Length: 426
Image (cartoon, rainbow, N blue to C red; front, side):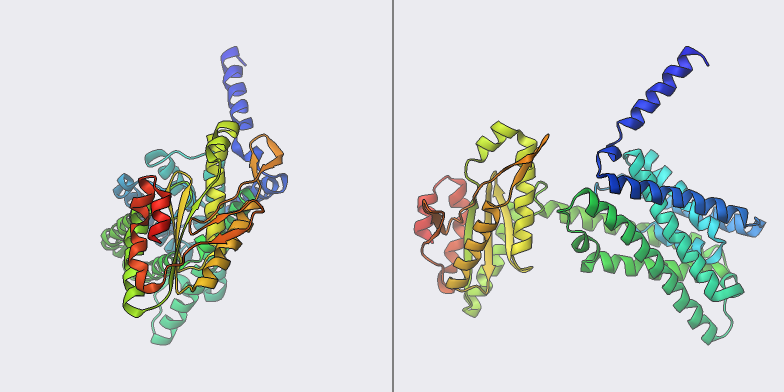
């Protein structure tokens, strides 16, 4: 082995050692490696038990080409970081239903390799785990469907009853795929970030609706391809349009959200608060508004660094989501200031909510990087009141519904640095 080859090999070994994977908890590293090993073993076993047929190879190539075309036609929209939702699975589900399981196992390799090359480069171990997760879930769906349908999977059902049975079993297989994939991804996300709200991200109405749409289109394409493979070509524009509309919705959502906290940004909060204030005034229902400020946040940034400060903002945002109701409006107003709007909330309830938030966040440690044993505690007093020397929340004037229109001036007053004027207005 020449010196140049040894140097390249040594460089690649060092690159693997630097993977972020090794910084995860040991049990999670073992889980990720076990999933990858199970995937490789499943591919090997399925390949050894499959005899390749020309028709299967042609159908696999056609659906794979449609999947690649979908990726290429939508690549300008990019790929979001974190949990990603797309509809490329509409081409992979027919492969799982109509072809032997080995094809379902290997098809994610081509798709994720193309995404890595043409859209966005991600960490290699993350792509590898995604391939393993999607591949195993598709393989499980394929085995389930083939076991339940026998030889019926490859031919179009003749009678209405057989067609209905075929469709229901196809949906069942798709649910196996979606459920197993979500389970594997959820374990990894939760293990790498215990504060992540996995259930909220994966099982909200919009993601579930997208999953249902993907399943329905995948079943329709699979049913059509059984009788005429060219159906896949005619379905390509519809799938591309669906993927673009999904990306558009994700971009619209991102434009409403503050990137560091996951809360509403100031502009979105003002617009939605104006609607809530007008509704409360029209229906004579109670409404409460509070401004939350992090004490000495500049000191936190100067002492521990801005990354720790950003982590503090993120955990405070997560605390708001945990403690408040779904229809409460929470926004990051700027810097270390947050603004809350609490519909259907009376005076005593508003004080109780504010005190609960103060106590929870004041007792939450934020760990500095490299010093896991030390936590930095801080308190967030709502602007509708103040914190006395004993740490108790002191009441200020409450905003009744008939005066709630004044609360919409809150963002402008605070941006001018006039908390005294703000308190008098409320």
